[in-house]
Length: 411
Ligand code: MLT
Image (cartoon, rainbow, N blue to C red; front, side):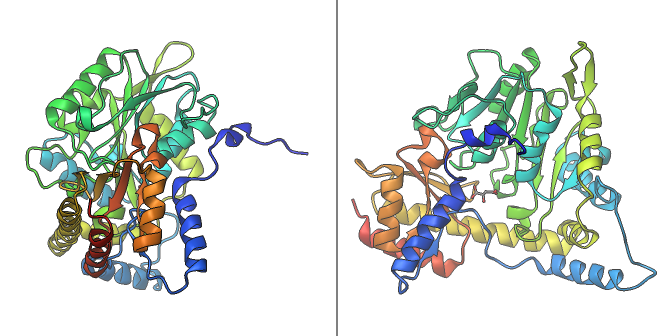
């Protein structure tokens, strides 16, 4: 009989969001009359911007005509999309990123997991706690950790707590680590990072020959002009950081699938013989071997984000979700709850009322209000006592959910 990757057996019961879906389905089956409002998984609800839809329709028509039909595209993505990203998302902000350093993919979740293919198994890896669970689970799958303890922490990972005490910004590790996952605006806490804060990480990474895996999937939600959108706004980041970005939350592509990873050609890792190797080359090799690129149709849709109409429509979409976040913040505060985030981010991080664990709050909210959120402990041990509410939903649903919570949870 074929043997299995035993590392999978170390994983906690289920990935967080399927576990939430399981509990919600059980509740829905028992209460078919309940009108459940989902503010759990950060999945967008508003339609694709018109500019993207029109570009997609045009691309479909091209695929129906022999003279404009496309077969395999470049694995790394079409040059016209990579160029627009390089100039408008990076160079316009003073980031020295070239189109050839951008790899188009089908998701940041996939990329942030798949990236482990190009790293050794002897790295010391730091994650924040709470954290986007994909960073942890993919390291478990890759065999980069030991077993999980009763708190849900995996042996071998360095956990950096992010709490109200440190303003949800992790302190630098007291030991030397090799890989560091950072996510800003943060999932799940909604916290943001200043340039000064990110500089402390770039300085740490350079001093320790470490690499920062910077997840900027929510950068489009930054409205405060002083906050950086990219790690490359920090001098020296080309030598110590890669960045993940996505069209999912920015332009409603969660179901359409398009994202990108930036690996500067100046970013290097160490080979067993002690030589320095460009990570760009390894990722390019991996991408060309295991991936055939995002469809032409979808890339044309993503390109439309950079047109004048696309930019205006994306801005309106972001403003819509940020207004939802504002409503959530003000209503929960009015209900006496302590909240964080939700300003330059689509997530509101709620402190659960005294005596209620994250999952207690989840169950209470589901049973009493028929509202679904995400228990903070699902993101890590330090997330216990917190709860994440997502601003991704219709205005009607957000207003109704807040009305129900306000009525049931006045403390
Ligand atoms: C979340 O809710 O944390 C996100 O939707 C997960 C993701 O983007 O994969």
